[in-house]
Length: 305
Image (tube, rainbow, N blue to C red):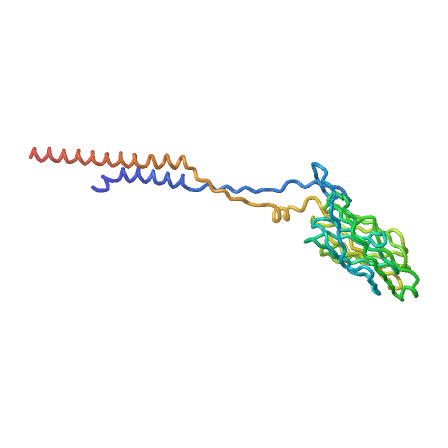
C-alpha cells in the first residue's frame, strides 16, 4: 500500500535530483597553451624579432680583476668584473678579441691568453641587436715566460666573432685565426653542450674552421685550446647560440602548459532547483487526492453496509 502511495513522488523527485546532479557536475576543460613559433634565422644570426630599434647600452663593463700593473708568469689568466645582466661581454687584449661571455647576475668572469710583454685588457658590452656600449677601463698587465725565448714565438688564437649562432640541427661554423708557434698544432674544442671534446689537428698556422651541430636551443660557452709541437698553448673562449625550434618532446616538456578551467552552469542549476519544489508539491498533492478518493470510496462502501 505504501509503495503504491509514494512511488510517483519518489520517481519524480529522483528524476529531479538526478537532473541537478548532472547539471552540477563541473565541466572541466583542459587547454594546451602552445608556444608561438620561433623565427628560423640563418647561420651567424641571433634569431631576433623586433618592432623597433632599442637604444644601445648606456653603461659599459668594469674590469676589477686583474688589477692595473699586475705581472704574470703563466697564461691564461682570469679576467672578471661588473656588467649589466643580459649583455654580451667581449674581452680584448691589445685590441684583439681574447674571448666573450654573457653577463649573469651583474658580473662576468672569463679566462684569456696573454701576449708576452705588455697586455692592455679592455671589455666591451653588446646587446641582443649587437649594439656596443661604452668602453670599459683598461687593465694593463705584463706577461713574461722564459720558455718562449727557447721556443721562439708565442701562439695567438683569435676570431672576428665573439658570438655566433645557428639553428639546432644545422651546422654552426666558426672561423678562427691562428698565428705563431710551430706546427703541427693540436686543437681541443669543448662546445659546452656536454658532448665529448672535439679533437682537431692542423699542420700550419693560418685560418682554422671549426664546425659543430647543436641538438637543442640555448646559449653555450665554447672553449678552444691549441698546442703546438713545442707544447706552447693558447686559449680562446667564445659564446655560441643555438636558436630556432626545439624537438617536439622538449617543446611539450619545456613550453607547453595545461590549464584546467572549472565552470558551473548556474542557469540550468537554478532552473532545476526551481522545478524541484513544484514537482514535489504536485506529487504530494497527487498523493493527497488519491488518499482522499480512496477514503471517500471506503466511506461510501461502509454506508452501503
